[in-house]
Amino acid sequence: MKRKRAHVVRDVAQLELLGSPARLQLVMAMSRLGPSTAADLAASLNRPAETLYYHLHKLVEGGLARTAGSRPGRRRPQAVYELVQPLIQVDPKATDPAYLETLGDLYAASLRHAGRTLRRALTAEADRPEGTERETGVLQVHVQLKRKDYAEVRRRLLELTEFALERHVASGEEREYCLTLAVSPVPPGMPADTD
Image 1 (cartoon, rainbow, N blue to C red):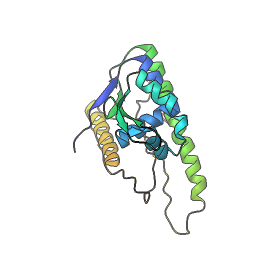
Image 2 (cartoon, rainbow, N blue to C red; image 1 turned 180 degrees about the horizontal axis):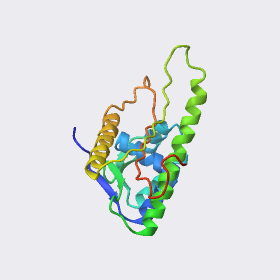
Image 3 (spheres, helix red, strand yellow; image 1 turned 120 degrees about the horizontal axis):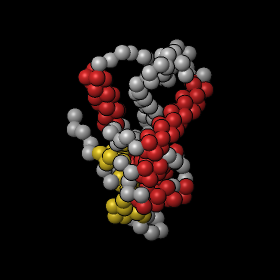
Image 4 (cartoon, one colour; image 1 turned 90 degrees about the vertical axis):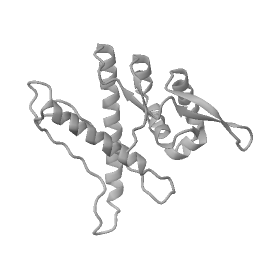
């Protein structure tokens, strides 16, 4: 399995750009779709294209995305946008308190988005045909791992993410799924069964 190249966000200002749910969704869509027009991204996100231009401009201005030419449109050429690298990732070695605080806010926003998506899906699943299996789920485990075992768990989670991204197709026949993976050491003194 070939790994996509990643742009590591080392700058707090770039990280803050991802704090906007709309921009974070755009980055995920751009990673999945590759070079895309605002109309392509809007269709993928089920949003009007007009609501994306500001956020696309901010991503380009902030150095996370760039324009990559244009395509013919109905009335005029449409700009094509792409990420500076196929994947955007946070700096795993960052120690700056401002960076870590912003990163914590970003993680919390991602988990809130996943929670809202899960609640909506559970409501929609109430109408699923009798006898069919539910397609939602949450798995939370607390385990004691050696550092090398944690590294292996992390590697496998990244492989799972890549596996899912490689199988993404947009033919209209498939369902879209939200996969949100969170891995964290339990802070010293914090019981494993608390919120």
